[in-house]
Image (cartoon, rainbow, N blue to C red):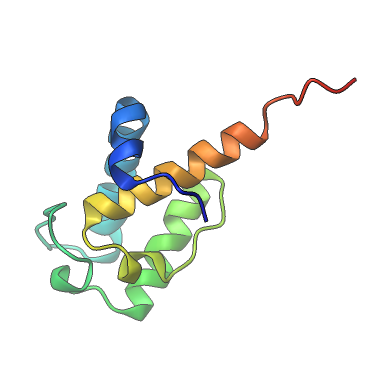
Length: 103
């Protein structure tokens, strides 16, 4: 896993982090209809369970085109932290796609 912190991800990618938050919000509205989403809350506090986590992460994986673990919502302290963790993975993927300078 990367040594990037959630705070680092928020500082370096405000636009894409906002995009990730929007994706999470949209996916949560589909898998937990009627729930009020507060990004300072833990996934379980919103009514999330293992089945909802699988559905949520499947939607997010499809949206960001990266395989994301269904354990991530449980491991993250808050939904804000979940968004930051997804951003870290996206940043890492983008950096690994950069040319290495080899010919």
